Amino acid sequence: MSPKPDDKPKDDPLVAQARLRRERRDRWLREGDMSVGRRLAQIGVLGWIFVAPTLAGLFLGRWIDARMASGIFWSAPLMFLGVCLGGWTAWKWMNGR
Image (cartoon, rainbow, N blue to C red):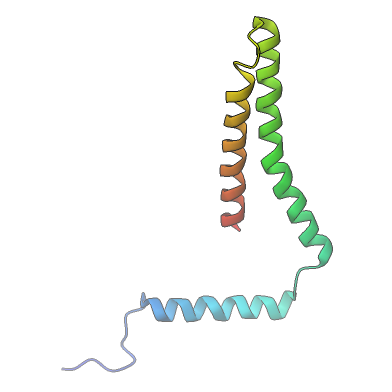
């Protein structure tokens, strides 16, 4: 007995992508484009997601260096760690939406 043309598996990637595109288009027709204010707010949030850990690492490093009189021994690596953490968090935030 040969399968009918409409007996395709439900997890067919082409069908899944077509459904996803239709859902996105329906949502866009319901909600429309994002406003300029909302886009600017997202850019602002993205900036703070990146900047806040960088500054926190720098301030913590400067505080440790001031207590131990070690120049920039702790400031530079903790700032770099903050940059890495901020970049990773920003990447996750951008791809999570």
